[in-house]
Image (cartoon, rainbow, N blue to C red):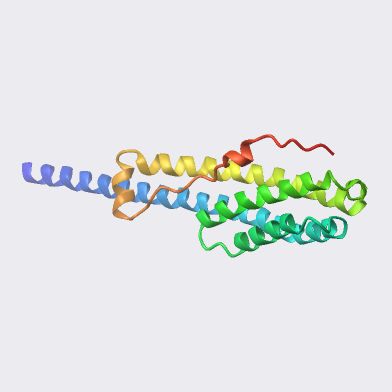
Length: 186
């Protein structure tokens, strides 16, 4: 009789252990999928941004003939962002692209006709709206990365995360250039 009770207790403990492992693994999947979803939301906004940039460049090009370097930088970093293979490459190239776009708007200060152009003003408004959406998507992504990273660091889920090779994800952080307040007036 004593052997049956001990066997039952061991069986129950093994069952509890298996259920705990399954729950932790499913939580890893849930958090990982949320991080991927957050990244895809950023990706959607970035693609809209990339589609808008050629129109902005063409509008500025018509007025600012002498600003070829500024326009080339925007084109270069847009291409790098579109062709990025990893989130890290995308983050880096988008940081550079943001700086290049800021330079376009700073350049527009030297061209009063450009600043008054309806197309330019519309593109500027669209880009501003997209930048706000990107900022929101980045915040959502970083929040989900934080929850995911926290979960894979906590005990005992860190053991399951290591067994199944779940690694921390990188935040989408701003560079010092992006944090600086631009000195541009329109």
